[in-house]
Image 1: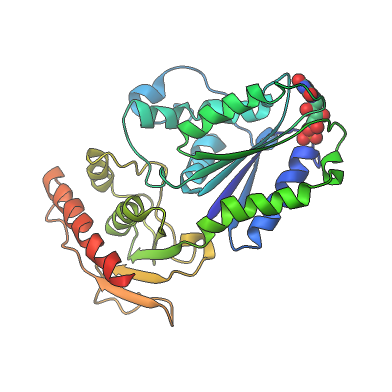
Image 2: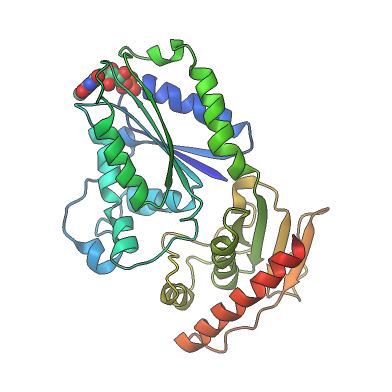
Length: 326
Ligand SMILES: Cc1cc2nc3c(=O)[nH]c(=O)nc-3n(C[C@H](O)[C@H](O)[C@H](O)COP(=O)(O)O)c2cc1C
């Protein structure tokens, strides 16, 4: 379970920074893994509006932190916290730069019609703070974040907004903040943390393990959280596998093989599925937890037809596998 916090204020230890640190600290104590992106210091290059993502599905700016890291984090996140002060009735320019770059994810969803495996379960939470008290103070922030969450496939969980707060760190003296955070964590974070976890592992984590993890996540989203890992991670996912998933409308973009220790962000899986490596004794589950060795057929080739057959076989077998285990 991963929470990605997007800190939109350029002010260090300001109100947004203070809130986000307190929220993530509380969330981490429930077992969630947390990451903060300091939008003002991340070095994100603004969108050029060139239209490349609408014709290629990826961003033309391929070498800044947005493309090399943040898209991947947004895809892995179970909860995204968008946190920004009100600047002229909108979010800060620093956070807006990050939001605008998510046009790439918008394109994958609406132009390419691809669906992220976590699309039905990812949540989004908005935090905002402002100095004045007007009735429409947060309307602009709310609208931008609503459409941002839609593009990144996060369901708007709720908004935490605070009026009349101006000086640095003043939010920490706000009566009721700790109770608000407790309530938000209980409502938004805990149900995600409590889901059962299934880890799919394979030798290089490039083809069958990620395919199985994505298909299982889509099928059993609210009930389980899946992850995939490898003993010796390959440098990228198998391209024929990614294409086979795209033909079924599943978006594998911005995911890469990772070592088994990093899969599921340190959480212990309730079930480990060792995919297609019966002979390799180094592949083991977690002592005391259930482990299944599963050998779906090797694809006969990397041709589209063979990869589609593998995807369909896996999808059918997953239903039985998960039902038997639960
Ligand atoms: C450039 C700028 C624009 C701002 N615009 C507004 C505004 O439109 N309405 C408002 O109530 N406060 C506005 N503020 C005040 C901040 O929202 C407020 O001080 C907030 O607590 C700052 O949060 P931070 O400490 O996380 O940066 C503005 C502040 C700055 C620096």
